[in-house]
Picture 1 (cartoon, chains in turn orange, cyan):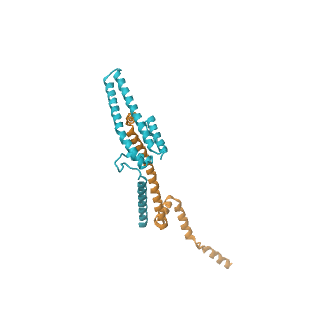
Picture 2: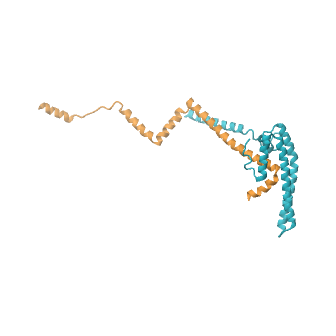
Length: 113
Length: 156
């Protein structure tokens, strides 16, 4: 009986104190990070980190320079193509006006009417 | 962060330099004034119809010989138009003078187009057969439609 009472008393004052799992803190931070990553701010933050940390590295920097060179070339070729086409039309018109000014004079009022 | 700005600055500089170099290279054949002082449209003609120097010299001579003829037609046409405008303002009814002015305008226009066609055939004969055909097609389009909108549909 005494033993039972002692046992009862011990059980009454005993508080369970389980120790945390070994990677508890890590898991919590991982979940916090996952939550942050889901939002736009997370994406922007990751992009910012990538730009600051990864982009200046030689491989990415070289790729960026190559890409801008190609982009500049492509845009220039496109614009030059339009400009050359415009020049061809204008030159053809000027040449024909120079050998046939009467048609030019007759077509000008018609087109502006 | 400093490295990032350096890389971005370099990227912009490379893009701009490649743009300007490529644009300049692509537009190298486009000339506004020829080195020998002739009109830009003749320089265009030379490039467009792939004229050899000898062909270009012949066509240049033809063009220079044709210019006074063309200017004469132009002056006669302007005078006839002016005369018709004056008659239309002054007279309230039909008069034989108006008919004569209209006849003169039509006559000058016809003479001008005949002279242009003669000039065009002579110029086309100086070109290679294929380019000559393309040149005459351009002239025909102009003569028939008056507008050079679609005449350059077959680029060189």
